[in-house]
Image 1 (cartoon, helix red, strand yellow):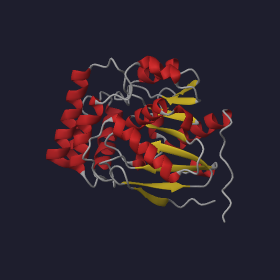
Image 2: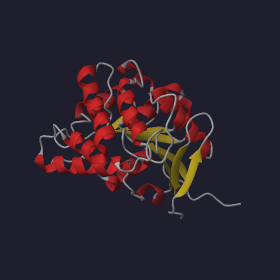
Image 3: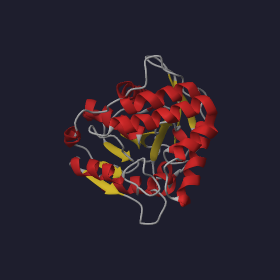
Length: 285
């Protein structure tokens, strides 16, 4: 079993995207959230590759090591990028797709566009609903963008932690946001994405989720530690998607989305229940 990451690049019709593949077996592509990088989906866990999945993660346009984008950062373009990655790294067939927050919405946008190319979806920490209060939400993201532009990672981390009532989690969120922001080769591009992505719509009506006719795992988190990813939105997605299952952390635990190993085990168990267990390593030659 190969557990060494294999870097890849996706060029062509769009900015150059950089990522890595790990393991051998059934293709599983996971997309990260806004202002994060590919490190922040399963947080370095190798559970999924060990269980026979070939895990592909990549930095979204303008994030991490990937190139900035002249044509913007809306979900139409993000879904295009996911399709480019799938064409580049998968062995054919229907890959499993998913992600956290922005990455979750990207996977949904892609699946709504081309459901026949998706075996299952993993939706962690969804935020978007078509009727969300846009003015307050947009102002919050604009403040983060300005902080990153004018004060760098430290300022971004401070702003990201504002409004977290729990003293227990406030410092953790500040540290994680600061560390994340320091990984970007093009922070100005991330600042642009912070303004554009929340103003983009991965779908127009919550009723569209009912057309996702594939197994879907929705992972929610408690609002005390992670109010930016409301528990009720994750429940809404699970309720509207016909074949969805819902999972969250136990009361008092840190958010499931922060626990890479635990989240990976939940994903693997879900996929196995639906006959999508990992395959043996591919034969060489």
